[in-house]
Length: 296
Image 1 (cartoon, rainbow, N blue to C red):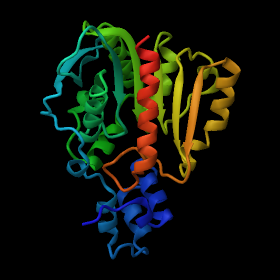
Image 2: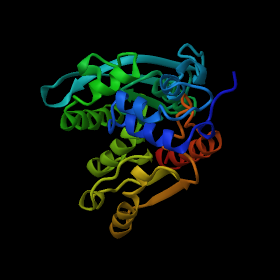
Image 3: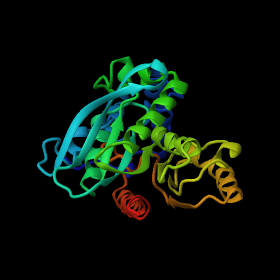
Image 4: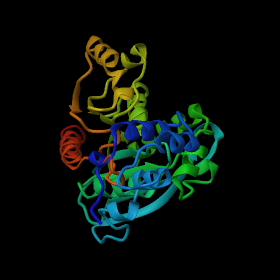
């Protein structure tokens, strides 16, 4: 079967799906709203199934790939919150110390796609660490709908403190060179922006279509930023002009790219919103950016 793309769906269906995955409408609301569309001969339920992730089909690197060494590790959460868990991946063989990259998931926790992203980062000769914000609530449940529902119950103040702690873990990692970068997607893009406001020595931050901090918070950023935006992502892009003005006013070193016509989530190759050309270019820019800022 030919893999479906965003062009196979009515733009309103994609907008409704974006609202659904971000909790603005319920599953029932999505199904009711798209029932009037007959796309590819699919029912409303079929539409949702077609738009949901297909992790197996999109996987680029096997967890057992001989080129990497991957494991789940635990570390103390700050302020006595307990234990956190994440996916640590590094090249199977390397010399000296490697730069480190914190990989921050979307609003579903550490699903197979983000684990695959961490493996891709490791194959670029970095140590990658992808925490699971849902670990304290049982971890990623293996179902995207359940993951979104659980995610809503997180204490975001605690979760943000946990991501700061995760960056500190990487900074102190014996195999690392002490330089930490962060890349995140959607929710993780917002966390990438947030970490740049909270970690003065963060070496680089790459938010993919992430929410922006307030102007007074943006003024605290010291890290260089590489920001990726989807051209058709009105929800996230609405905050970009004010954020850019704040970055300019604060003299932040930033580079921003808006990829015309593509959807929010264009880098996520498990769903039809994926855009191969934009994702390839954004990934190349990301790795070049990390190489420039984490290996010096």
